[in-house]
Length: 355
Image (cartoon, rainbow, N blue to C red; front, top):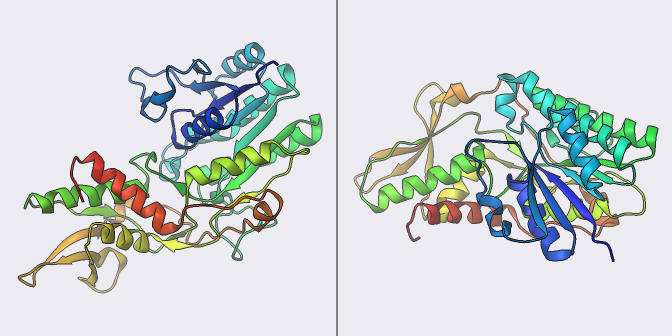
């Protein structure tokens, strides 16, 4: 029996590495993990698979059509799972062209390569709730209008459209599902959730060692997101890729929580009950999260820095994944509390301290 081949782009990132874990565990398929050439590659998320004969890292770049063409032509994949993107929303205003090139045109290059060299391949494009943007109603389903408020969201929306065009035009098994916010212990440190949990671990270490600490600096505390653990989404994606006919879904927790709530729960993991205090005239930047000490003084744990505000903020995202739960039999296994606890404890462990 011939083993099937799977290409995964963005393989060193959060989603890509969890997909490698899942396919290694649940199939006998060969995996080709695509990463860009780098002078200092970060292979931590996939290091446990580096000696597995079913897993091979190859060099490729979604901004180079020849690179993607050659990979697809040589491997003739049965599955092509695209997690590669410029995925940090905040940076997409600073590098909009790069964001569009990697996140939108990169998908088009993958589709073109599949059309030419592996038309039977099943293609997956990772979508984002940022495509919903300035939402009109909640929860959002697949019928919700596309209303992005960032270059990143617009690029993901373009990827969604071109995937549909290629599916309809060339009868490809190509899907672009909407993934609401999903985090994990493997999330990059520039994302707000890791910024919080890493900051909590740093502050906890300082308190344990009776040292002073610098508070965590964040932007909008009232933005609400539908957060899940990334590990839970991987099974849903694989189920989508293995239906009789291509069909797109939303994956989400069907709950929404503010950044403020995330902060509070992360500090509770280390036994700190902080207090929100306004220090000025009630503007957001005058608010801070404080630790009340035995001498009744207050030490700031989290402060608001306006430099982290985005030019256009998405205030509320809340997904409706009822269709995926009904038709795929999928549902998330980790609660919001589980997610915050896992991430916080992981960063505490990385600081080399015990709770």
